[in-house]
Length: 456
Image (cartoon, rainbow, N blue to C red; front, top):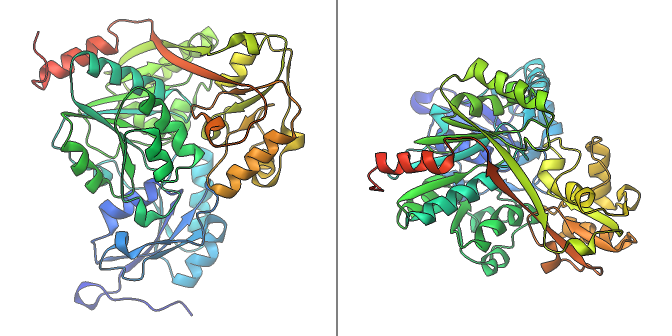
């Protein structure tokens, strides 16, 4: 027998909903679409991709008066049982970076279990800002959004524009403490007990003096950010679309994964929404794949300005790599659910003539070992997984077991600041270099002039 069913307005049975997510888009969709609508009853979230999320609750401090006890979070594998237990009407998919085949597998599970399967629209999940918004999104995780965001930030600084970065959510800790987060320096990362995945996104901005907002409740985050900025720079996560109605929409696509701009969710949404599309990594991709990606873009978006760009990889100490046995640590999300077999660290090892790239797979422990089993496309690199204290300890143990001369950090986070690494560390840096006109500066000048923020 299903659990107690609550009545909505007029005594009608409330439509019972499960939100499928990964601790980010799911919470946002609840906040902006479901939280204050009495015709719905969100009975549970399910969680995927992110460890240590299940078994928690979305707290009452965030869930609102319709949910005084909060909302439970269950593992996604339990979806059929939860649908039956709670007599669920709808399952709402609310996370990103899925290929279309995976989306339909999840739909089939919901449909065969007796629930409708639903996707919420861009219109129903975006907030209206009082300041101009520039959004940087992507077709796939690891396409190079961060280099584009930093490039835009530098241009805004050049013209004296007050801006803040609002980052896509990564609330993996105590949600009650993460409602609104403001990052100005590295001490803030420690204060908020950030995971490696959060540090990977925030540290590059903080090094350049950019203020970053993030958290769980983006209405409150936006209100706080607008008090100190004339322009909002949305720095997207994975290949999710922006949380805000956007005045200049920039999408980054990756010719190392040609075709994904047409068959990833919600990557294709971002390609269709884009005013500007950056075809990144053209220096690493095959020419025919660059051409294929551009052709695919034009099938679904004929208005966007297309800019080809190089992603330049450099390191702080190349002499430490040459003729050395190296361990490569890469950005975690890009090489796990992003589907890349390797990243900038591996490219740097080859570029600077490492003697040997040591395969870390035989040395992996705990959840790091599990990641190799789950993501079989991973190459001889170590993903910088650290979604909590325990996983960070497992990453440290894995590194410690490997006999190498140097660790190459392809992750944007300097993990040597908070993990004990006993060998020298080389940091990898990668930056955007545009090769087409108009470029981002040309486009931003026109944008700022149009909003009365810049005069020639």
